[in-house]
Amino acid sequence: MIRGLTIILTGLLIGAGAFFVIKEHDLPHSQHSFAHDGNSRLPELEWLRQKLQLTDKQFEEIAKTHEAYRPTCEALCMKVMASHAKIKKLTSTDRPVTPELEEALKEHALLHVECQKAMLNHLHNTASQMTPEQARTYLEALLPQVIELPLEPDERPHTHQ
Amino acid sequence: MQPQTIYAHPPKLCGKVPIPAMTDDELTRLIRDNSPPPEFPASFQRQVWQRIAAFESKTFGATLEHFAATYLTWLSRPAIAVAVAVTIVVFGAGLGGIASERKNEDALKNAYAASINPFIAAHATEK
Image (cartoon, rainbow over all chains, first blue to last red; front, side, top):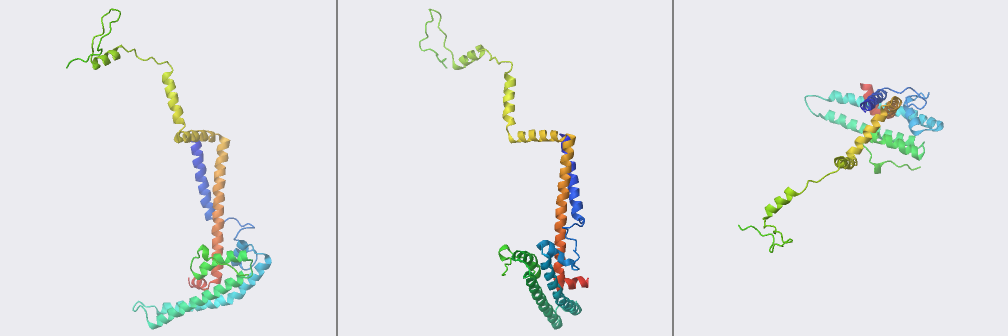
């Protein structure tokens, strides 16, 4: 009986060790691995292809939409960086809020809204190229990140197609 | 105190002398001293312990202990022990694989979100 208990405990220890080792290290690349970029030149889109099981045609259309959105995203990114630099420059240890700093902070807030609007439009443009089920999965995964709020089950998006 | 009379009218037993009156305590002592000790069969004590063991074996703790002892003894056989240990290790590795896949999936989802979010892109560039 002691031997049986020892064998079980040893198996459990090795099993637990295998769990943590494999969890912390990436699995070897396989056909179904998320790490493979599928020669798309857009590795960030592979999550969409695998998670939503997009067809090749859908993926092609969505890749075009993604590339069309890129200039908008890059322009906003440059504005954000400029706004951050301005705020850092105006931030002082002597006075909490100067009128210039307040103005810069307001501009930053408006820029934040502009970015969120651009992202929401892009998400819905992308979702319009999917089936309703795919679109729902896609929006459920990404909307909370864009609006920076969690969505309750009854607040989950529904698509009109 | 007057001794309590057992017989109001002591009977005459074939002309013999009737039983004298006794107190309750004297009568109790008389019965105890003259009663023969009970005789038990040789197997009586063993039977009692068997009945106690049978009752105790039906409790949950005893059943669990019996099951554990039987299972662990069965597990001591080499072939079975190796099979069980390998199963546990494979199960653990499988769970690790699933957890790793989920971690990869989250990392790629975040990469996609970063690719469409100007704020995240700006923060990444500024670092």
